[in-house]
Amino acid sequence: MAFRTIIEPFRIHSVEPLRLTEPDQRRDAIRAAGYNLFGLSARDVMIDLLTDSGTGAMSRDQWAAIQHGDESYAGSPSFDIFRGAVQNLFPFKHIIPTHQGRAAEKILFGVIGGPGKVVPNNTHFDTTRANVEYTGAEALDLVIAEGRDPASRHPFKGNMDTSALDRLLTARGHLVPAVMLTITNNSGGGQPVSLANIRAVSEVAHRHGKPLILDACRFAENAWFIRQREPGQQDRQVADIVREIAGLADGMTMSAKKDPMGNIGGWLAVNDDDLAESCRNLLILTEGFPTYGGLAGRDLEALAQGLTEVVDHDYLRYRIRSTGYLGEALAAAGIPVMQPIGGHAVYLDARAMLPHLEPLEYPGQSLAVALYVAGGVRGCEIGSVMFGRHPDGTEAAAAMELVRLAIPRRTYTQSHIDYVIEVCQQVAASAAGLPGYRIVREPKSLRHFSAVFEPIPS
Ligand SMILES: *Cc1c(COP(=O)(O)O)cnc(C)c1O
Image 1 (cartoon, rainbow, N blue to C red):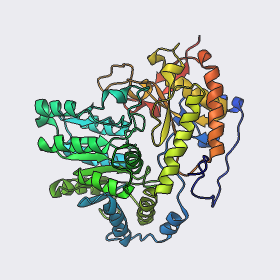
Image 2: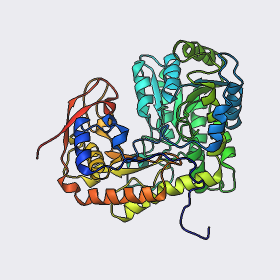
Image 3: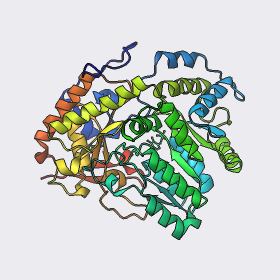
Image 4: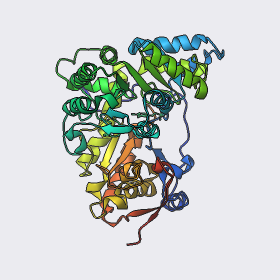
């Protein structure tokens, strides 16, 4: 590459206005939302980095595919197009569409979960953990030690500790219905899993007679990291790496709101005929007929097109470089960020930025509120608010206190990101004065979505 500037490999085709607001307006809005960023009206947000889930821009060709959607209740040709696009990358035998990833999880664990069972993963995403625990099973995180250390530069911090997995399967294997592996490891910082580790996890699981199920939401970003960082992978097509990964597994859950470039959608895929039949029976109860699941025919077509775009190397180079651009600029400004920079998000280390707060004064929440008030930038706490409350009712500090700035796909330009960098710098300069928070009200599970907070007076 002769030039340093990462240009977006697309130009803008239709625009959406951003409402520009002032700090006073935002202070009122966040107070009214109970200091919970999920409680804001998106009209009051300027740069929305809450999540990369379903927030990306669809392409011209995806909008065209929407017009091709066939809304037949049963046997829609749109389903064949969707299934073909999925199987082109993930050649699993049964492809079961759902309205999003958690619906696939609910159905899968509804069949294979249950009281006393244990489900290992590198790190369970929040909805995955909740769906495992809802059945009475235990959700166990077995990520490598480097994956819990925000400063470690390990190139594949999403890797699973395969010795710990082997020990678990030796000691309690009869309780384990399946091994899960999340690529990239979202809750662990959007960190990739190496191909060598996926091969090793597959070997251990299969040696113990257990199926390996991928939580593959960011498979293309993970495969790009493999291509960039793993010896011997540099000359491969991302699509081929993805096919190899799929071949090491026995099924997958998927949120099509991530790498498949959809605004909604998901699927469950398995090879096992009996498991597929049980899952389809639950699908009909909660989602719909197996040729549309929880989706319209037009959605299935948009996803099929999105799957061809996400494995494009120009797109992935831009995607990973532009996320790195934000992370590297923050690090250069002395702001502690999780290293190396992940694929879909930059994670600010709130414990390091707000050392005057105890973990249960929620430094991540405090930082996320401050970024919103200062610049209208909405991020997401990933720390003791999200993970601190345990199913038995006790509360304990999470392993890390992070604020995730997730980057929607193909949505913001470099000048938006330059603005975010300035906002972070301003907040970092005054971080010592930020208050802790206490929770006034919270629901029984997934409390980060609806808890009400108040600042602790200093
Ligand atoms: C988003 C996500 C899910 C859940 O998918 P939804 O479409 O939000 O229900 C599961 N696992 C991971 C890793 C995710 O990022």
